[in-house]
Length: 491
Image (cartoon, rainbow, N blue to C red; front, top):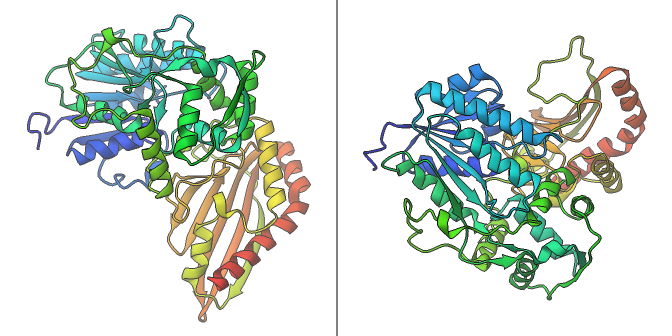
């Protein structure tokens, strides 16, 4: 055990996100004392480490919440991101970073560690400029800031990997913008986590910027061909055209892949820049290379494919909250005054064992689908995509098991009690808040399953919406419940 760092408290912000969730796991395996700062504690309850860490619930824009989160902290990991929150995400990120820096100085934090993006190209995107400016604001006080700048992160469940995977799988012939020929230096998520966890063992605070990248510099087109080869696919035909702007490219990516347009756009804009590590900003002076070396692009892709195939994806890009429409409140927000709750209730009694029915319910969504009325679900997902929502293609983290906080197509798991209760919260764009609930119990030796679609409308528009879609409920929900029972009986 590392006696030098024993007893120090490490704060991880963004712990419900892709990198943060994995970093907490790694710090815990290193026997560190960890505190997490999250907006909604319910979202991390399904994590294996949730009951072993200190949890502070709050908003990073609130000074009082920051004071509570940073009290007694030695090293604070800043993993907050707002790239798909609003058009002015740069201003939002700058304000959050300044507030975090001031609160850290006030709390006597010894070290801030920030994961940003490589920004050495003068032709950098708004996204990379914002990430660079965030580091500048974090370093505006007396607290030393170690800024690790990474390029494309390749790992099971990352947005960049999902974008690469789906584009390559679905398009044997593709027209692409010229940026696919730009150079980039990807890094495996395993190696990003190696550097982050090693910063917890530094002997003294560091105040510097370090670029971290893998051992290869490639183009995005070369990455797609490497992916195709490792996946057993034929070489992809790539035709470059000059007319595809970042906006058009992100719309296309939002249509073809699970990554929504609002998230795809900053990722695409970043590819316009050459994202290559600067040797003058090497991290090797303070943290040596991993003993087994850095993973190559092919090794990183192969590892991500293996993790996906084995259903051992710890965190996904969709674990972080997705911003909803202005009229839609998040589930953690206060209830609206005089809130009306509309309900579609269905019930079925069967002699199929409860455990078999639960297997089907817990396996709902993703590749398994929604037990009938598939074209209606597809249409609703397509409409959601068209208005900027997450759509139906986010899928599942695991094909069989759910945990609180998991994204599930355009739902999120809000509550789950094995073989008793499943509550899903809708993250599609709606004029209100919606849930889908399943409850199971045994009565007189038979399994009773209730299914409730709940909707809290936002004003008159929300009520009109409910009554307009109600006719479709007569096709969707009874069919779903019947097919769940049929599938359970077959199993």
